[in-house]
Length: 287
Image (cartoon, rainbow, N blue to C red; front, top):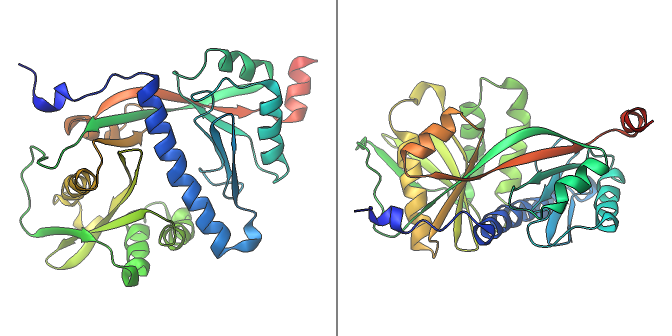
């Protein structure tokens, strides 16, 4: 007999893709809005075109791209022109992260306009409910709770320390923490060991979906169960606040994907990220 969780898995179809894509798009749009409030000269903005969210955060931000392209409506050449102009006016590269459940005409259109695929992302999901409990051995010394408003600076520092092996990202992570603290609906969690914060994790809720992200542990406190505790607590929080699905994204075949699958996540689909070729490169290829 199938387990209760397995019985609750919705099919990986267009309806599911629309829920997942919209959840991520809305979360990222709120982040862009927060940057625009904090840094009025940043030009941060998002627009909706053919049901997709096109957003500019900064030229190098992973949020500067479209979300949900082709999933909600068929995209025309005129609409692609509008999206491309939005990014090019801000001197940003043009990226689209596309679900395989998007309208079949979209890959043809992208190819005709000179786009190149270059990256894959596993979009993962699982059902959640209020009685959820992961099959894990808990470290009783670890406690998880929401980060308070006056602790957002500390949360950003813990996150930066958790990614300290990537020293080139520290300033970026501290800025991200500052903006996330002002992003509507964005929640941060601490995992504490003996009362001291050692790990953080983020959560955004929308469309009945709990979107997980931003989890890390400081190097000195790894492999003590902090991330498992954060995962279970965030899943329960989402279920307690009206969500029946959880979502996360990972690089295909990565440790993050394997860990997610160990704890009940399935791959809904694999997105392909497309980049518009620079005009000079495009002219050479078409010439």
